[in-house]
Length: 127
Image (cartoon, rainbow, N blue to C red; front, side, top):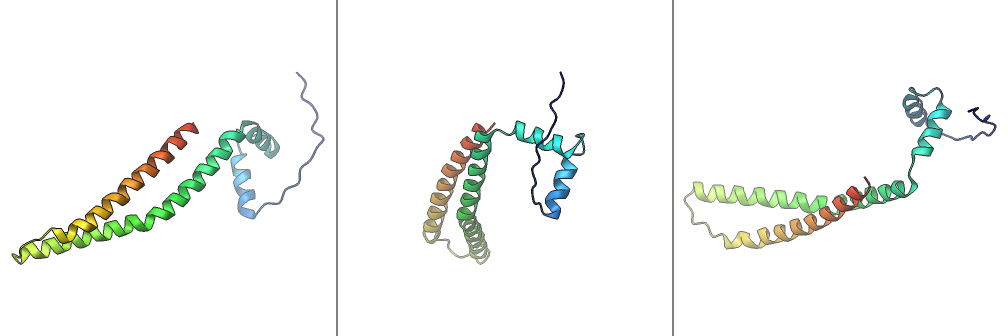
């Protein structure tokens, strides 16, 4: 079957890095044009948009919980350090002072797990 003549042109602006990236990805193609056409034809708009939305959601989720996770880690380290010192000095350990912090950490981690499962389901649907 005879291939149709390509008569249309598209002009785009790229950064130096974008140009290098496109050209390096196109090395296995006969031309940059063939690579771009193949990429456009292979692109699934529905999955692509959902993928971008999921990445944005994950980024927001990560930023929201990063501080909480760091705080939990610090609190656990402080609790462990305090308990170690108390044990070393043969002091009676009253765990009630730690229960509130552990409960907060547990609630945060449970919320984190719920959000993580939601994102994992969305990610699986992209396959």
